[in-house]
Amino acid sequence: MIEGLLPYPEYKESGMQWLGRFPSHWDVRRMKLLLREVDSRSVTGKEQLLRVSQYTGVTQRKATDGSEAPDTRAASLVGYKRVAKQDLVINIMLAWNGSLGASRYDGIASPAYCVYRFNKSASPWYYHELLRLPLYKGRIKTASTGVVESRLRLYSDDLGRIETLVPPQDEQAAIVRFLDHANRKIDGFIRAKRKLIALLGEQKQAIIHRAVTRGLDPNAPLKPSGIPWLGDIPKHWETPMNRQIFRENIRPHNGKAERPLSLSQRAGLIATDEMLERSLKTSTYDNWKTTIQGDLVVNRFKAHLGVFFAATLRGIVSFHYGVFEPQRKLNTKFFELLYHTTPYRTIYAGRSNGMTVGLQNLSNQNFYAVRSIVPPLEEQEAIVAHSETATVALNTAIARTEREIALMQEYRTRLTADVVTGKLDVCPAAAHLPALPAASSTPEPLPDEADEELETEEADA
Figure (tube, rainbow, N blue to C red):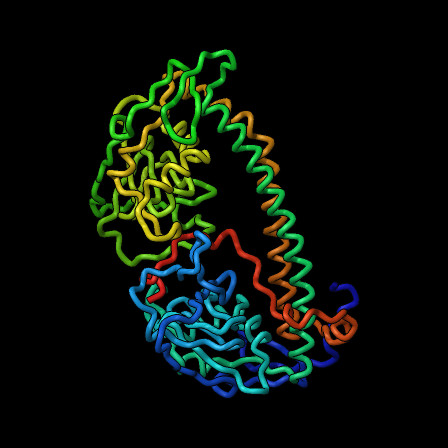
């Protein structure tokens, strides 16, 4: 789509180093001239609950179990802020990382958010793209009030003082039209790649499932496991309760400099600053726990997703993680693989407490009450080694495909930046694009797999 795109014929200096040059017939104004804050509150709390993500903008906050109940811990939604289609919704605590966007829905949002309505001269979807650029996230960060990053707030006066580009209305519409078409093509590419990753992941899990539930000897005699959804296992394997093989070890953080660790659903237990997923920031490490190599660490809120990982390094983890120490000689990596299988994810989903899947919590008591299959230590180690070897090619293919997605997302970011800041003139190209269905003119954003860290009302507030 970018073939033949050219810069505008003339540019002028903005006088601001961060903004640079822009097309000479565009204008620069402060945001307060383009929008106004609206603060209308819900009387019933029955409207569609919305959330704001730095990855997907404003989306419907639906329960992950498919029910109609909103995905929230709030006792009541009365008093939440009303949002109309095309309103700009901003999480004032996280505006600096792009947690804002124009809404595709009527609904309600957290009272901790701010809601703004654009005047007729401004296209909400043009400013949706502009304000989420790295360029503007940096400007928003400097405009926000606060001393440290975790305490920054973008209040209405702060937003109003931010300088913004103002193209003519017809060009705003052309830019939105062009980006709609470009994003649809990019999203189609990413969806196809994610389907490929899912298929590769299923193949990988099938190999691991066979190894951790049946062993490596195809001729080994079998017996009923006695564990729901699992079936037969090798006759010489044990099936003890988890309380017999693991015990939580709360090693309080002693205040020394220790590396903060987080559980990534894809990469395991890694340094928090290496997380690709959105991770809730903290200003204190009080009540955090120390974990050492060989521990089994679980995100209690995501046990039903198989978020159990063997610790391979020492560090400190959040108090809401469970840290379990083996009570006998075990290869903890074997149990990481075992608990990632579908049967065990189903078992832990059933054992977790909570009204909806997205808000479940696995207590120690319920973890200890689950039976695990335990091969002899030598077989555990052989199964782990076999699983790693047998899935090398699949892991390579998954990593390569994820890299292709990352490159396409980088391309999207660069293209969007060049178009909305006037580096490229898309008006001639937009004029020849086919019409999009009216109902699809502002499509639902493609879910971003990085946006998978637990979100709570406490974080929003």
